[in-house]
Image 1: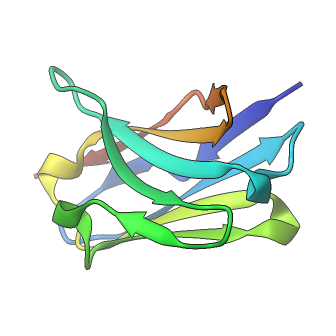
Image 2 (image 1 turned 135 degrees about the vertical axis):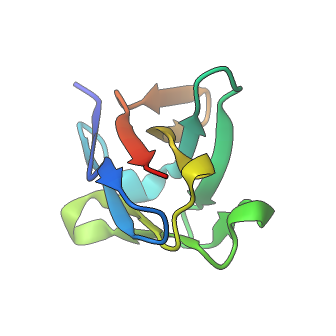
Length: 115
């Protein structure tokens, strides 16, 4: 019933840009805290950005100025705009929804920044 589907990943050269999308079904996305996480091979999964139910956004300090999280409530979709990509941004990117004791994960989308 509840589903999060990420898209927009792919291969990009250093300095390029990508926009990731996460489309939610089975619930109203704007009533959940929505987050983007990423996990590179051999590393822990880390929080990249999040948007609260009131629209307040937070981006991890190391990504500020390059990454932006946003939401389109009419499309039940959250986005992660990534600019000035670096090889160290290579990772699987995951969308997560949280409300109370419930948490949902998407399947992830792979971002590869070639060097």
